[in-house]
Length: 256
Image (tube, rainbow, N blue to C red; front, top):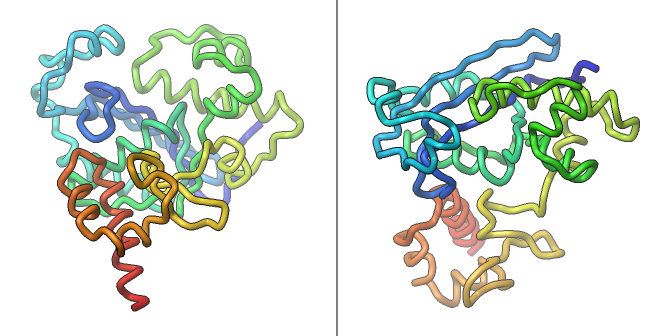
């Protein structure tokens, strides 16, 4: 079953130096862009992360320092990546929790204003876990009846993720072939900042989800304790979290 699309959707996968969103860097990115007419574009880049790749990470994806030393940095690639995904929805495997937040960090380090607000984000892993609760390799075997060779290469994982979603639509009659519906179905708890430091209460107001102000409205905390804003801006929080916090602060100031 082909995807019913109102605008293009980009399936993507990242291989990185590790799993810390605020600190780690991309070493490989693969993007498969599907247009509403089902035309496809596929791009894969190796990336110089400008930091050592830990041996334990190389053991997962097989990419070593010497494999990327002469490759472009993400800052050099960022304009191409941004042009490719601009105006598109996004999809991936565990992408809502990892790939999208880390991509947002890399984009912002490259001085590109990445904003997820207008993007529908379909997480194929969440759909799979809600339905079958297994890994990508198992999903590919289960839905596509094929073995996933070359797993943990960005290109193979990206193509497999695309094929799994199409097969999921064939397999489950109750899944709607609509990007917005799939994004809502595959979403975890909704966060304001991608990384989960700022979430929403039942009224739809931003609240902190950690620390001494857990559960408190962000606007109230920033008004009563202005120094908390400065502490977060200077601490080791993701850039996108700092951006969202700044947006809330400016919004509050504008209403005074």
